[in-house]
Length: 112
Length: 126
Image 1: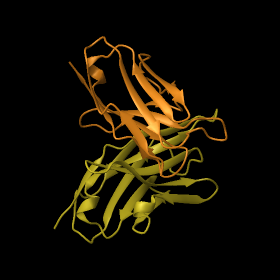
Image 2: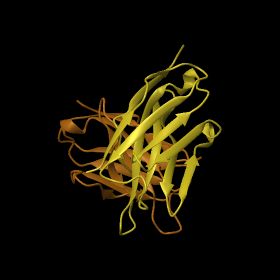
Image 3: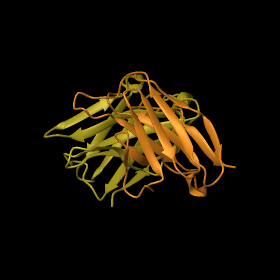
Image 4: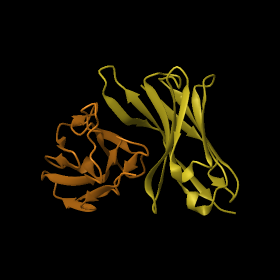
């Protein structure tokens, strides 16, 4: 199985400041179709996870443009340009290049 | 707008079968551009994908190796829903269980788990 490793595991950010989460995979997520199957989710307290970013860098419908994804191969980053109070929760990366789908351990973001 | 509504018991005895259902509205379980997944979440295991069912001229299933001998995911085209059965449960199967959709867009983009059910806490205990 592909192991997804996130850092840091927790993050405390002042509103209006940027935040960055790293995700590394144990194998390349670049498929022979030239797409890279790396996804980001946010799980707010008491809710189901929600899709933020798909295929490394495309924001899902309704996701604010302060969220951006980047990376290639095995190294990926989720950035929030200016953190807002509504961004608190746990962020997960996930790979879907192969089965089983596997998730990172999660990064908890809170507000200072 | 797609909605997934989960139902099923929140308490299951050890060695018995866990059964959950996910009713789909706004899409079809038979869509050839979707796949229907079960995922669980526990403090010890985090988010764990369990398996999926999907239709591409015929029905297919994929299961995680960790539960492959105990799991069945079945579509129900008449009720537009899909179900999870997990046999011979132990306390280690205690988790919040989610159903979720994959969607393949017309330009080939894959939206993995773009819609989720509300989650069902299942406790395995006598």
